[in-house]
Image (tube, rainbow, N blue to C red; front, top):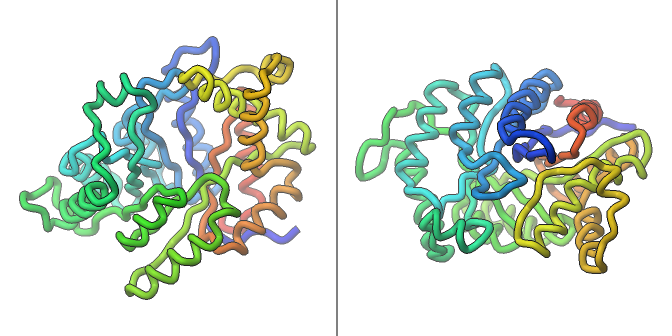
Length: 324
């Protein structure tokens, strides 16, 4: 089995677990980041979600600061800050502080998603102003970080942190217009041509295209066991589509044996179809196909109920990469 020769990173969403206090999820994120650094992971990103019972991370800048303070080498960032929820100056100031405290280790991933539900969007006072407004806000953040804003964002930086856009098919067009690196998720095989178009356009404009593939990955001793370990996340995703609430992770056995409606079964299978799971050899082969489609970096989004199983999966994945 040939090792994969590209950077390997992690996105952790601070998933809550049934029967645990939410604060445990945040402590677990920091523990996982320390473990990822020991394993040689390149980046460790945290997420922004509001009013979601299954996710404890509502403030990526605060959580990234905690992660960076407890690590020493791994890059730390956001996957991502949802820009419609924030003033560009505030985002720039937060990440300027992070970069000043941890120079050369901070990434700023920016996304366009609004809140999970109408009450959340109302509480955030968020409005979707469209792609042109989003790109204008991205450029405003970039200008503040570079010291080119209409006012001086403090602290001033010698070198601003790199910006990334979170994207699916439509978001790739925005990343192309901005000429920025992109983190893509979803059905990646369906994005082969859009990714190729992104590369051509950014290169043609004199930029440097860079593609991070955000992939749900799980490694276990058998393919069946790896599939089982993904069931808590798959069930939470399917349940959220039916109830509008994304729940905490539950034990594998409880989820596996739970009766499901046809719609819930379809949701679980849809999630699993986009995941990469199996033995180490199987996962290496499947990730290798993604790499050949033009991916520069893999960012795993693995989560399961049992944290010890999650830690073992993180270690097994790192063994597949020469850079980890």
